[in-house]
View (cartoon, one colour):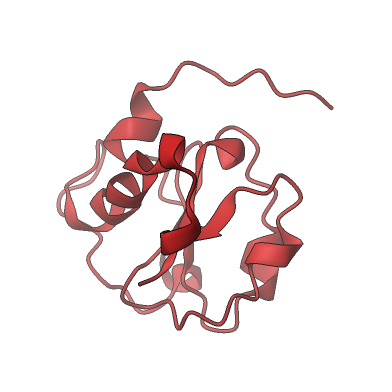
Length: 116
């Protein structure tokens, strides 16, 4: 099991979770953040600091957002647009910086109407 970042993060990417993560397993895509399922240690530190309530333990993910579990994993195992190979497990987001691409689900979404 792991934590999953869902729809409320798309086009927001607050990054408070990135600062809180003790193992640097939250990666930055073009429009959303992604938690590496193999690098996450399930500590839960990211969940309470998310200002848009986008992070869920996989078993607690609302039904309408269950496709984000697959999209989160796809971010690491598929070759994203603009990349030559899948990200795999780089061993920390800081090593690679922003990726600039997203998983197929997030990439297919229209821009989200973000209220400030």
